[in-house]
Length: 178
Image (cartoon, rainbow, N blue to C red; front, side):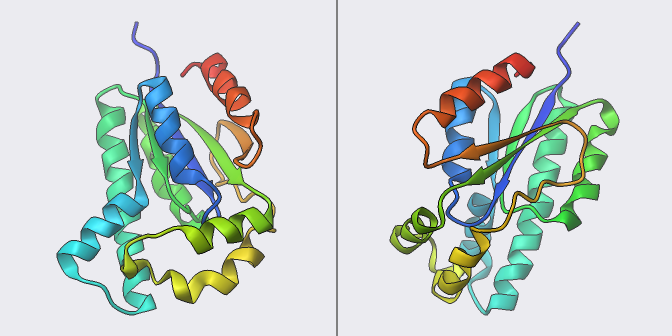
């Protein structure tokens, strides 16, 4: 009997280490990985950049695309990782993915506020993200408690700025069946 596929949701605030973690877990666990900004940046290249409202619209479209990529993987019996700054409004769509029997788990990425501001200031992303407008918000968001989605399954908090944290998370995910 084939193992039940897992939808691993990586979430957190900007510059908390979500993408880095998702890509590393994908390689170490041999699981497919879909990242919101990869989709959003492709949309910027195809449809152009614009205002903050336009960027939000492309974010919403990116989350829809992520959900559908995950649906295809899970329907084929494959576990996958989806990464992004998921919001509570996305929970129902993600929950619909479990109707075929898939399991869910979530990892909330965090780091100290000073580290998040440093990362955010140093990173270079597609200009369509309008990071310059977000700089002041990032430090404030990093102090928020984990905001897991209302979904069943295990939850982990991952401190991306702690050297030993990755090994513990990887071990936990493997023992959970990934």
